[in-house]
Image 1 (cartoon, rainbow, N blue to C red):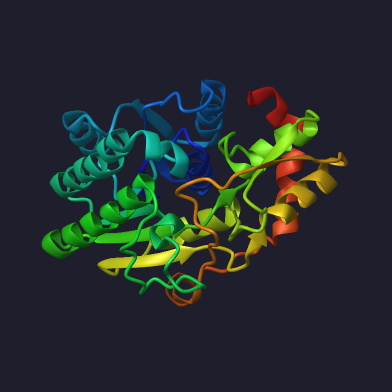
Image 2 (image 1 turned 90 degrees about the vertical axis):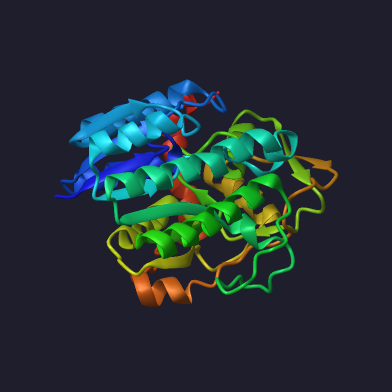
Length: 321
């Protein structure tokens, strides 16, 4: 049994990681500020699942509160910290760069200081494929400089990686940065493309397509991401960066088609201009994660969409707005 501390525990990925760990018999302390970015009902549902899954405790707190973060980590006395909490979303970050900096950069600094003070040696930091921008060669490789972010969100995630390197170097900590590639699956945030499009198609509303619809993303099913997170949590190697993706690009038009097929309903399309801050294509090279973590994603996109739609029809309708 290992003691874990998960920030963002009430969120999509944080709760998915927590439920898996609890099911394996570990102890989990969750930390979340229940930011009103999306409906509270979905987060409360996630917490109920965590409480039902095993030895779980919850601290309601804010990463911007340095004292609260340090006290919470010290009280939990974890062996591993998994840092997933963040202000999420590329487009909202353009409107609120200060807020994203305060949570994603200063909050991460507070957490790393708390880990140092508590003697935590193993930390996993959730980064993002957005750090690659549009200038990195495809497929994206971890050795890319990543010095041309396209949004404040991407810049804050890259800043978190640089802080992780500094703390690993100065304090002998093992900090693994995981660059997530467009994670989807049951209980995902309602504004994310697959959840949003599913809801619109189900309700007979038009799906907004920004640009020509040929932008591509490396969609990664949440169970595969959880596999990678847990593998990283058990690895001691100083500072390392890994891509966690599916290594397969899916155009936006196919996303709509697969959801429409899974629902058995036609999709109405609304064409809109391209949005600032969005990369045109993301695709992960996962060779490094395969070799070091044994990471091996198992869920093809079509299967993942069907799993999501099945969950949505059984549970999601009553939870999402």
